[in-house]
Length: 243
Image 1 (cartoon, rainbow, N blue to C red):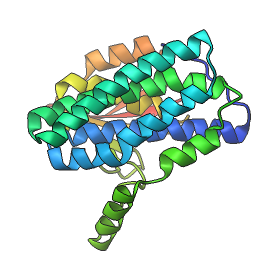
Image 2 (cartoon, rainbow, N blue to C red):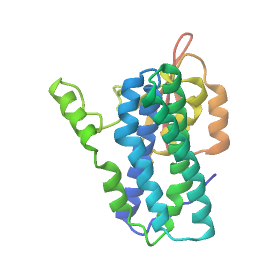
Image 3 (tube, rainbow, N blue to C red):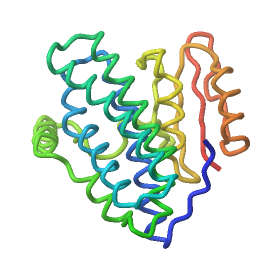
């Protein structure tokens, strides 16, 4: 769905874009961890499940209009599916269950970004700055993990981009080769939709992503500047920047 989202102030507009970016980073992160059940389970428990719960409560606070109620039901359905898949992964960690949990989480995050956020932003009852603060506050487990990674010399999980690195021009890398096929396009679109104007990603693929580009043109015609940085034959790299 194409949405024109209006925020009530500049600070709220900045908070809205930050929330979109955070959801896109979470989507990329869980997709990249779909082959690592332990890491995915940690991310789901510390970030995704609490974050989706926060957004659900935000919709409840937004009021009981027809549009809000419909979006709340859709998000609740997606969140329940994600929580169920996360619980099954915790009960029996495996790559198969990790893939299912990652797919469910990406679906719920995309629903939150494309459907729930416009409703939240248009409601005078929702404080976007407070919502961002709640989403950005790490759980105790997440904070402990961040400290452990810092002690080991790694970047903390909650800081910066979770897409897997940055190229020399400052674009966040999104390596599609590590994302399961079933959730690949949803993950890419989630990452693109979270970008503010002037920001972009470096898309890495093992084939020419012409079907993806065609879908992008249908969804967001003229909104992204796309340039091939490397054009095969084994690896394709594309700069994708929001105009």
